[in-house]
Length: 391
View (cartoon, rainbow, N blue to C red):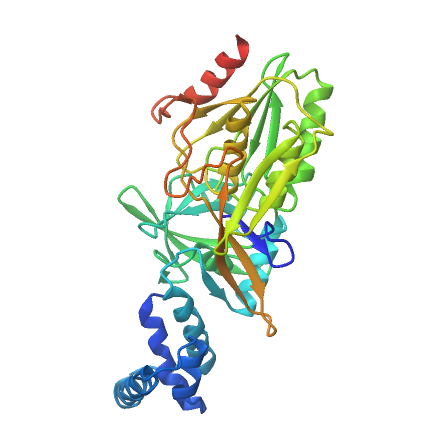
């Protein structure tokens, strides 16, 4: 996921029925005939029709609805429903609590269970990518490929991943109950939250010349972690580099561009165009440039900022892409904080690789396609990268 803040357009990046919650909002004195149409920017004859339907729905709620509800939840349902009605899975509304949790996660440290997850935006299924070593998730036995089914007794399939993550996080020492689906078994787990420092970069020397750096996501801490790792490998005599972006779902675009600036020659890294055709560019100044051979590993879960990275490497021809077709997210979101501490995340532009390709819903094709062998103990994609760099 790559997003941007309004201050820097590259920065950070409930179904329709939720909108019907506006009916209950009448109870708090809101004049729906004025509020809803004007919130939607509509000032035509549909106002009376909308108001009449809302009033009708409200009558059903007052007469038949069985359970108690909180006005705050109903109000949030209005905003979430409005954004969901746009039909874009990457656009949404965050309550103040959700927004604070979202920002905390992108800073690279938080209190939670210590697992990296990804969501299939077609099915809504949330899958565990990795349990961090020494984390509550790892200690509980959470495994890559596990499907997160329920959190605190509520099914989470189809709910925005960032909102689910905010439920998994919380005060250190508190517990959270989850249910996971592993093959045909449903497993119940109770995990105790604790402070997590996200290790977004791992590195090692593979042989005397080839270094390896895996980037799991692009967070605030990633640039410094990458710089440290690269410097360490270079001090050990590294001449060639493998960068592993497999299962990297993206993150902060400015962090991605800062890392690419360390690797690319002078020139364009990526550019975006908004609905008005306005173009914004990110460039490399070549002050630092890795002149050695590179290979970049990608797969179907390499998305968003990872594809900006892979696209730039491929377009410049400075590295060989190895693996499988990437996810295909070629759009950028901006976060717009609101006065009450809430925020909206809105898709604001398309991004293009240096050669002008937008890969949304297409992905990037590797130079060398190598399917992962799940049954083998060997990492065949990594072995191919070593073979290519050893020639």
